[in-house]
Image 1 (cartoon, rainbow, N blue to C red):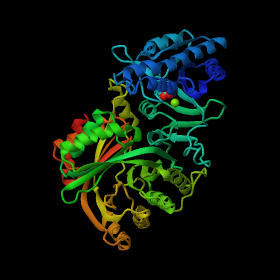
Image 2 (image 1 turned 90 degrees about the vertical axis):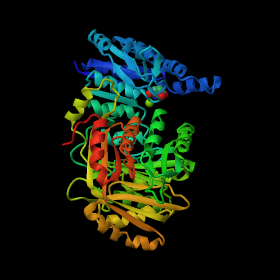
Image 3 (image 1 turned 180 degrees about the vertical axis):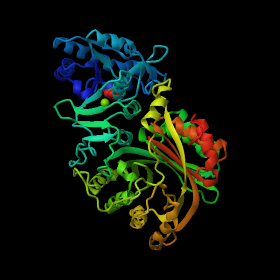
Image 4 (image 1 turned 60 degrees about the horizontal axis):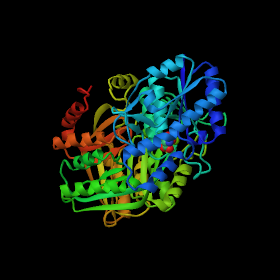
Length: 600
Ligand code: ASP
Ligand code: MG
């Protein structure tokens, strides 16, 4: 029989009445002929209350005891849910993570799933039960209770759907579905009918609160059809599924992380190994690095900036300071009070001017952009927190996300189809093959590593740190129809900003010409370029949240004395720009490092 997984979030099981409502959805699916597995979160604000209670006792609760404590929230919900199903005259049995057989690693409060045994669930389903599974929790090999991190019930649900080969995984929540942005902030935000895994992965990881980003990784890796739907009505919600062939909008959504902090290591020696040391230490502390920016070195020293969630700042700073002293950096600077706003969409791969448009709408509101990073399907800007709402609204209306279909005359389609340097995601077969070899369900899937040596780098330095700089630069470039690939704008030092980007080599001279006027507007600014660069892309799933991929990437490059000029990261791809002469060596070494055999 076909399996359906239904997950109910905290607000959808907050009261007895809501629990009854959820139970009747499960019973209804059962009567329609499905084998039903229900995954539940802790009721209402239960988890927050437990966290608070622990804080009243100690400021340093041990992670093991936190897991023991927090797992009780879900245990309460499953029992109540099973009772509610019984009341409706159907059979149900509740199970904790341990009873299901959710085996995790030992990282308390952020555990990753190693495996899930389906035996007991299958037997119970076959006997006619609705299985009620506690979300968010598992056990390690020693039977210690672990939890998957806040919001982890979504991950439990998609993981169960994956191992049970479910036809559908429904995520019942207190909103209509996935929105173009947070409707509390932008009332015109629209619910989207359908979104791809990649877009959802970026949106979730970039701050759209709808779903736990690790749950989307599972969904993509195992091709689980997900539907996010309201628990309170019959609304159809949003389908999260593979990317459709026709791109209908350039930008699908605007995400933001309100509380970001930035750390800059100043005056690092410009030599291979710097990024490796930094990333290894951050990875060991399991701190996901967000925007990473390394400037093109001048006078032998480089600065590296990266952002982390503000609540990770103390931990990240400790790591950064230790790293800085071992690398003999001049200084470590932390900046707080920042927000990150990102636009996400597949259409960017084939349309020029998206970056220019983003910078225009932000500049039009007088918002200063401190850092820019891009990936194939997103553009992120770091700005002052006080302007976060403004920037989100500006991006939302600037890309006409309030309209079902936007025309976007300002944005041009590239005639030859794909964005230069963009590589198609690994085929489903290839991914499936890799997945079948994984011994740990949440192991990384690095599915491909490719190189592009047909691009050039352009760097503009000594720019004033003013609103409108990025706009001026990329409007000029977009007017010439040049498709820009990676963009990195550094955190300004001493009031001066630097922007680097890559363009197809055949467009390099044109790009430099297009910049002439901009340069005249900003006296003192300098353009430099590197005609032959090598851009290496590591593609996969969940690359940023699995902090060790970056660490391995940089370690491998450092071991081969390869200097990194530019970096960008996303959940789907890590890209580095190195010198073109070293591209072959980097490819061979990296493919070996990630077990990928020789290319093409
Ligand atoms: N109860 C947990 C939390 O509040 C897990 C979840 O809701 O998904 O984070
Ligand atoms: Mg949740």
